[in-house]
Amino acid sequence: MDKSKTYAVVDLEMTSPALDGTGRIIQFSCTFIEKGKITDTFNTLINPQMPIPPEVQRLTGIKNSDVSKAPLFIDVADTIYALLQDTVFVAHNIMQDYRFLNAEFERAGYPALELKGVDTVQLAQILLPTQPSYRLVDLGNYLGIKHERPHQADSDTYVTAQLFLLLQKRLELLPASVLQTLCSLSDALLYDTAECFKDAYEAKRKKAEPLPRDLMRVENLVIRRPQFATKHGEALHFPTEKKEQTDLFSGIIEWRKEQVKMMETIAKFLSSKTETKLLIEAPTGMGKTLGYVLPAAYASTNERRIVISTATTALQSQLAEEIQVTLKNILPFELDVIVLKGNEHYIDLDKFWRSLKQPYNKNSRLLQMRLVVWLLQTKTGDLDELRLTRKQDPLFENIAHTGVMGLDAASPFYGVDYLRLKEVAKKMRHL
View 1 (cartoon, helix red, strand yellow):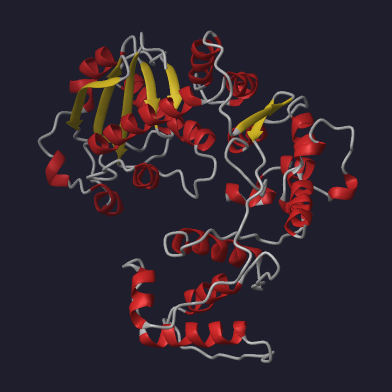
View 2: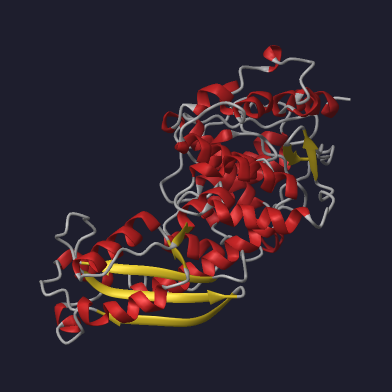
């Protein structure tokens, strides 16, 4: 962030988002950021001189009676126009708000604004690459930003301003070489969003900071340094006493008689040397997943793996996430969870590196920027972590893995290839 600039974070509520001239503004709000801090706000309701559609009233909570005595846009246009001068226009979906506001200015006889602009949606997509949703309310919940009145412009601009500041902090933490790569791809971004990356790079490159110990650079990509986890070698016994079980659950999950009975049955079966089959029918809502996953975790060892089969990879990922989130806080030991998928689910680092030098459309460039940041986080190289549909972009076809046998041993990425490292890890577990 260039702290010499004033950022105006803007949000509008309208009778209709259409840019065909039929919609009108019913609320304008702006939050100002100077020197990295929120300094001021401006908010006003606006009389649209037309009924507010019922669906907009339900969404925003703004009723016709609320705007009946509010000023017309032409009455506040001069104030808004003056406030925005010499600022950088920031919005969550800038294409909508900036264009709509300019259309209203022109309708009121003012020239269109010619401000630099930043889109927080694209910033969030790049800097938070694994988020399932980039709606403002969902990002606010994820980052712990209190959003009192979603879809009211004054609340939305304040949350967007806090989001923008948090994203800037994440941006400033990126290594200089990563920022340099992002800058080389940023011409695909909306308005002047690319300047956020260029400002961060200029500030970072002067410091010449070493990479954090958990990261490594290969060519012009920075990835997580591979680590091989260790695990207990002997199976532990699932507790059978109620006090032991309640202590284990420790308030994270509720002790339920039927669920625990299922756990005990499965634990006994998995520890048996004679029983080979077990069939359990359980009713909906009993907590079947934890009912079999928890005792299975206790029975797994370095020599004995527990395989859970599902109908789809989506269910596999959902199950793995539930295990990681819930069991991590319950189990008194570390647990390795591996989702078995086809080769094409994983990124081929060599192919991705080469793709950065090839021409792509703007959507693909944005995806490449997300991937560059994601490589700092992923331990698996599993593209499904991005929560995207493969058909959304042709880039996926060019960077998807085709298997270890197809790797080039002379590639600089051969030694850190995710699928190859999985094979190495398997061999190490059997030593």
